[in-house]
Length: 77
Image (tube, rainbow, N blue to C red; front, side, top):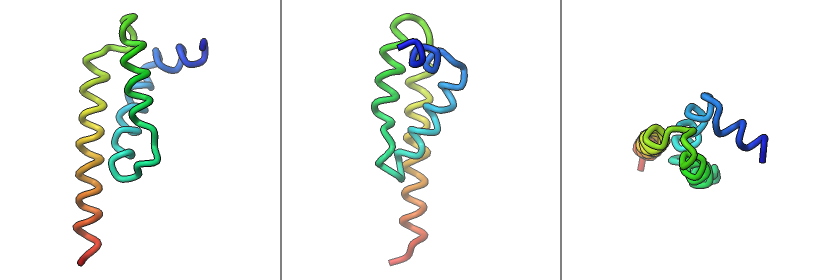
């Protein structure tokens, strides 16, 4: 639990959350939902920032969906 607490309260968590949410958009094996829920649970204590967790997860998912769209569109008929 100490390792998880250290990871979630690190400033690098925001970058990892964004990256995992974006990758999940076109490679669905990545567990972005678990990471977002964990970030939300830990945000109840004040760290990480809940608004930043929500915005970065949504932005990552948005970008990941667009990457999947462009991959599909570029692959041809």
